[in-house]
Image: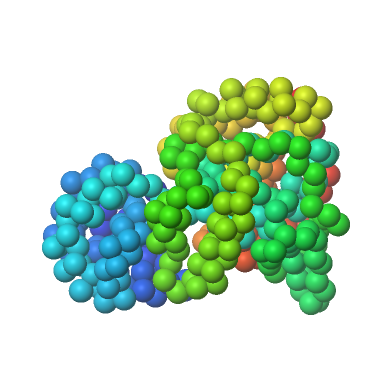
Amino acid sequence: METQAADTAAFYRRWADHEAHGSSPTYERLCHAVADSPATLAFLHTLPRTQRQPNLLLGALRWFEAPVADPAAALAFLASHTDQVRDLMLRRATQTNEAARCAVLLPALALLREPLVVLELGASAGLCLLLDAWSYQWTDESGTVRRVGSGAVRLSAQVSGGVPLPAAVPAIAARLGLDAHPVDVTDPDERRWLECLVWPEHTDRAERLRHALDRAAATPPPVQQGLFPQDVPAAVATLRRFEPEATVVVMHSAAAAYLDPAGRRELATTLDELGVHRLGLEGPQVSADLGVQGVPASAEGRFVLSLDGRALGSAHPHGRDLRWLAGADQTGTAPVQ
């Protein structure tokens, strides 16, 4: 997943062809239209490069109820509402918070010694911090189903390749999220922004998000303002003081993509120096930049699940499935705590 590029038109075409293709025909057509529109590109170039992302523009158009299903009408709407859309894009960030990713993160998390304390980077509304609030259902190639957890919101995923499915949700003694712009799950506008970031065809994701936000609002997860990697050492120290004997895990999904390659390397070095477990779910290039070993060549268009710098499998970006890698370690390593 790219978050910025020097050539905006090529960025939007590539995003349409590799991210939206096969998943959102609406956004695939609209992003090609953006790439072919000099006026729209000129508008995007009035924004900082980091704010030109397709998901941010598309979410802003949805916020103003632009007719995104009709590319010509959507761009005409943008041309007549440039000031409002620009203001929103400067104030907002792409903070999709897909709880379903927990279904592919949990098997890796369950490899570690309990109890766990979890620090999530780029936590947004903190839905992925509530790993023990959901129920889970995994279905393997033979149709065998494994269910754990008792939460009202069920997260389902197809699994293949011998995923080591847990018999229970791991015990989590403490949790904390870091985000540059934490989302208040009790604020209607914040909730609506997250809903606007869900792609139009993904009605199942939109419904799941609403239910997950309702559950999170009942007991808001602890997410504080902070940047990574610079604020990670203090956050880890806080968790260690809270539960000294617990296993510390720093988790991130679709978050390290917002760092440049040097920032990703710095993040990996920081986590190694802190002696914590690192659990990642990121794109192949982002994973490689983080020093993950064994990134599969077949992971194009998918996310790589990694633990402590080793690839365990590949997953659908929205957590729909998990393919375990042959020979992937199923024991977990033990950094100095």
